[in-house]
Length: 165
Image (cartoon, rainbow, N blue to C red; front, side, top):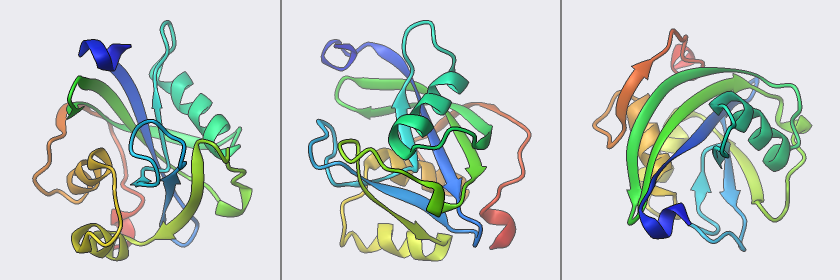
């Protein structure tokens, strides 16, 4: 409803980092209304009414990845237009998770894979696979490149992936 009416709403994204310093990315489920089968952040979720960003992030981890106890921290709060009628204020989180602990919701997520930043950058640049437009913008921001991400607040953080690059 918020998309059809063009209402600004809240969302979260999570970058999960595997022990070998690779980003766990998901391929969205084939039955998803938005961007089916496209590569995306580890977790992306809308924030429900009366729900905090953090609670939405933990709910998304549980629902999409079957992870109940991940240690995540917020990187930024940002604003971005995701497409027609999709205007969001979001928070981006980061944390470490062993991919062997992931238990996918097969409707939400088709599969996961792990990439280091160089591999991910090549994947995005080659355009051989479909990648959600918001994930491309978030990766560009993470790498310090021009991005549609309008940062509203930066939190203290030690970038897990960049510290190993």
